[in-house]
Length: 296
Figure (cartoon, rainbow, N blue to C red):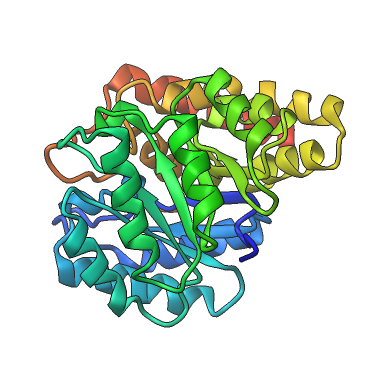
């Protein structure tokens, strides 16, 4: 199965109103902002969406709204995952029309062995005909999916088409790129490592900061994929400090504040997440204004 999730994907936040309800009008603005900015695909209900704080009905509503506003303009990757394999397999049978693939995070909290991780993704793979992008993010799951486990899954299951690698371990990333079977892609899961990871042979990125600066981030990725490292490097360093800042006090608080400063959405979060500090707000605003000035 061919992977269609290449280039720049953005992990969409979920905007909230002051009363804590989902702000669908701002979500529409955000989707259009990303599409008009030139990204290649959208990621709905990932970690950045605060999906853990959404009810089942809210998740369905967010997903349906993104599908409606997107209107088949870009492929949509839907985030799924958890630590109950059978429940995940049951739930993915009701994926709505308009979803082109699943972003499946490695099991969290249980801390399974590598064999447990392999068997988990095996069951998900045989439960759906949709393409699957694996998601390794040990900083959140408390367990790393090794290169060997990733490669074993890639070689065995045709609908496992890529991995979002957010381990921060470039040696592990290089091992996967070196030994990946034909048709299996690596996507960067670390915004500030994207330049390095695509330079090594990855096919793209799933980005947080890219939704705030879709023109710039997608241009950097396209330059990298076209082999123009000089132009890509220039954009990488233009965004570098900003990207560091938006993760300083957790995600998605930083990027929500940036998008609030751009008047696209509010910065409201749901507990247990909390708004970023006033000092960080000022620093992010300064970087946002500088990037926008230099992009005009």
